[in-house]
Image 1: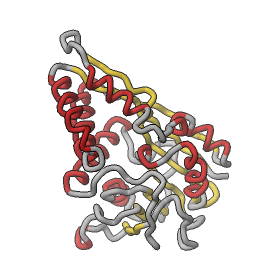
Image 2: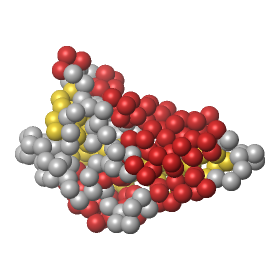
Image 3: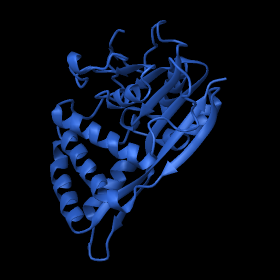
Length: 267
């Protein structure tokens, strides 16, 4: 599949070993919060399922699903192949490709999949592109296929602090970054994903939210700090903020958000 580059809202993070660790770290964290790789309302009780992981990153979700469902074929698709595992470490039922998910897919992919999984595209999707992306991903599904989409809910961001944490100006600023990372960005689409599914001929069979349990609050803080560190390659001015968020975390403050899973079924 041909690779192309999305210019409207380019990928803000890096693709080195530390970035791959962050993606894998977040994968295991989110799997633990949700309790599944594929939502229980999506049937997986038959052989030879065809599954796509869009925005696959390191391919960790695809690899775990392929291990759980050994008769399935899983296509890991990302705009960049830089973080995929080496050839010798790839499972035989996982195929890797580089493709911009905003661009039309080739005929070998259109209408072929029982399940399409998407996770954490928040930082590369704006309101004016979300509907077209849903339509493009829906084109991959067979009739009766499922689109599973997992995202943080940026407008739910708030500072959670202990009684002894004191003032939290850095975390307060980070909350605003969650809600509006740049003047041109917009994230209403994430909070309206089920409605967008219905508007684009997908039956919304799941619309659930997940809270970060108290014992995972340090993980939330660590993930945020690592993400900000990566982001510094395009925003070096964030170094001071990252350091101050780390200091506030040590005093008992974090920025907390909820997460959502929306599943749509194609007629």
